[in-house]
Length: 203
Image (cartoon, rainbow, N blue to C red; front, side):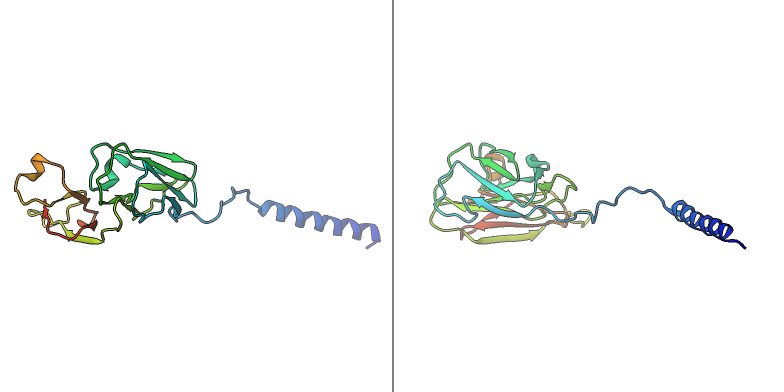
């Protein structure tokens, strides 16, 4: 075999290998990395949560990523309840809550944002988050916990309002707002936090 033929055969084999390798390659879209399953996390607030002698008309909470709000009308629980709903808006990576009424003196307020705050990409919600402040000199720290079971099906009852009254009258829910309020979760469980010492009638 002469040199020219050897060169041609080698060149042909080289081109064949390139074509085989090229033919085996599939064009696919980039995966984009691992899916985000982490909810937004609070990084700071103004004033700080658990502030005493609170006298502001607003508070603001910052998170570690851009956020959106889900079903704020039904899911945000404010205890004690307010007569006027606050204005809640998104400012970049933060939420701004403006209060539209004068607050009670020497009272601890608990604002629950359970499953309300989500990231804007995957919709991961923050399962349990509360902002607490007191218009007095200390934070009330008592809690009433329980579970609601349907009397007929014996299944847990979710999204049930839990109303606490300092007075002891059977018709209270018909004549006045509760002094404190909570709501059951999917398992029928509830916890009304930041209560003062005392006795309450529960509806």
